[in-house]
Length: 206
Ligand SMILES: CC(C)(COP(=O)(O)OP(=O)(O)OC[C@H]1O[C@@H](n2cnc3c(N)ncnc32)[C@H](O)[C@@H]1OP(=O)(O)O)[C@@H](O)C(=O)NCCC(=O)NCCS
Figure 1 (cartoon, rainbow, N blue to C red):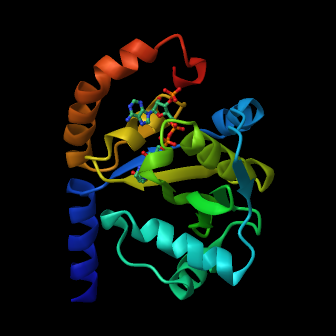
Figure 2 (cartoon, helix red, strand yellow; figure 1 turned 180 degrees about the vertical axis):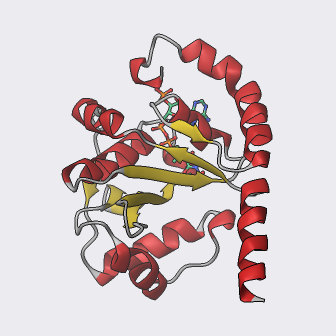
């Protein structure tokens, strides 16, 4: 019975996923971290270390309704306890207040070292200032140092800003279920005008 259930669940996973998956090629990560934008005045990037940082982190990601409700304890147990490295979490402060965050946790299998970008978030009033790019590529740069084979992120199809940011910065769609072909077709249609207008401006997006 258990075998039957696991066959059904495996088959289902090959047909449908609500989320879409991306891969960050390792050479892109290595290159991108060398050319990161400089943060504007007043912003500071740091690795969260204290309970106060975890509380700020929890408040920040709880602002996004899609991320659920977070406490400092949940941040510690579900994120900080699984980081690929003690430096694999980044918090951006603006004049001392947390306004952006991202971290990378380990999702390795027995044979492959796999890292997973988690809960990238920039407070709406601070968006469009390259904080998302800095958080993503600064934090994921650690995967290069630690010899990871595969680096992935998962997001919801309606998160067009995140999708655009990833696709225009060298990320590759993962088509891991039948439905993912439909999702990626729709996403690339919706983002085609924006991606076309950026082509040439962002060489790593090719
Ligand atoms: C995705 C997110 C982190 C981007 O943060 P951000 O600080 O605005 O991103 P950046 O300023 O670094 O933008 C990076 C690139 O993304 C693209 N981009 C992102 N949002 C865009 C938008 N609304 N319109 C046009 N381009 C956009 C652009 O290519 C931009 O590059 P540019 O500044 O050279 O034009 C932010 O929108 C966010 O927190 N969203 C909610 C949480 C979320 O969806 N997280 C991802 C879950 S996996």
